Length: 372
Image 1 (cartoon, rainbow, N blue to C red):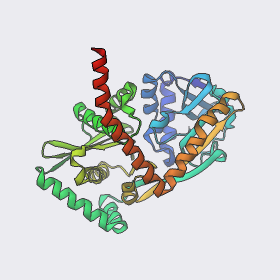
Image 2: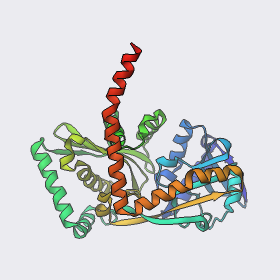
Image 3: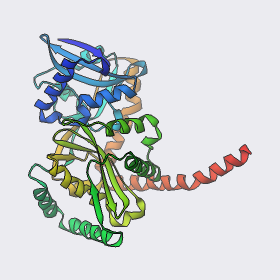
Image 4: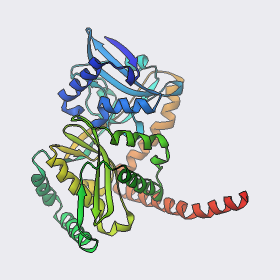
């Protein structure tokens, strides 16, 4: 067994081909976040991205994309941004994870969206839970029938609001795989506003994440692409989503809508149209990612299993990383698992976001006055 660590840009044509070959051979690896294309774009934007290439008997048996930060801190590729982590490997590959960390020159890695059941990491899984999926393998008609059977009232209400939105604002139009950069930035603006309004960290306040989304939006191939979808009422954009796809799976990433149209539930209407067009494009599922949002529960018709795990080597840095991350992660899991706690936390964060938004203009005015 041999492990070599390289930057994504140093992978040769044969290695790129082998990565794609291994990924296509295993349904459990069918996520764009595990694609070599995603690793390549991340490597262009972030200097700490690495790939461990695993050879067994002189043949490449696997790849492990990750991030190596200062002081030996390891993170899954994309970290908090992504919803799928793990080894891209042949099914029979079994590594000692500590040997992998040693080769990667990191002391510990914490996973919260690990492909469940991988032989190398399975003994270290601390929690395994389902992530909701819109199963389109039988076509959109079959999917809708299952949604209606699971929650007829919710489905009827959403369709009523959809008709009302179209009637009052000039008819609805949906665009699949929109290439318009202006539309992409509209969605980014909505999402950024949502983060601030609900008290979350604004991911798009980081310029590199904006550049990442722009780069991925421009990617087009049969096996990997960024997909922007938009819902319009008349000529007005009301909801959108930017995600990534493989040949078979679309992963939900950045859904957003114009809050001026919130009473029409445009985000859920958009998701139904997105599922219909995804099915027409030959995709088999939409992975909505684990999380506590209620709309996912009644839109889902299947699940994928996602694990949390921590791998570490004995070291002071690994202990410090444990103290910084694990207690918080366990608290977050407890809140997400309890619907009452989740709703209370959501209300608290939303209240904080509103208060922060209210005081921001006043603080800005005071700072300007002092500057004068």
